[in-house]
Length: 88
Image 1 (tube, one colour):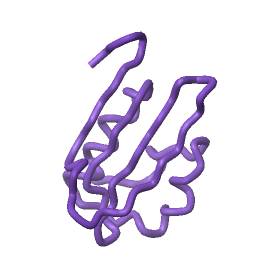
Image 2: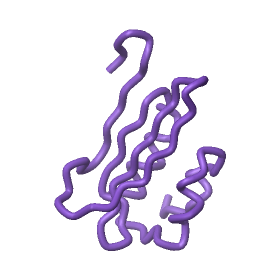
Image 3: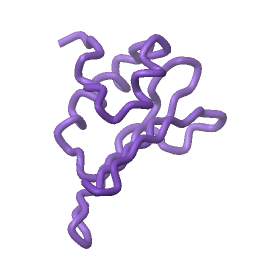
Image 4: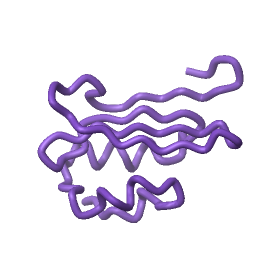
């Protein structure tokens, strides 16, 4: 969805009961990301003005890639989520 100049994307389950969330944002760039993690697995994500990472995030969710070791990295907006390996 694009609305009011913002590109808003959701992928996966953004309502997973008991999920932890990680939020990272840059107000100046109008960029926001929220990741929903349950038992070390990325269950869903909300992305605002970051459509380019959606395909990779969808693979992480589909393939149920464990991401616990990247948890601290995900808190940093400069971390490139596409550096988390997936099966092509």
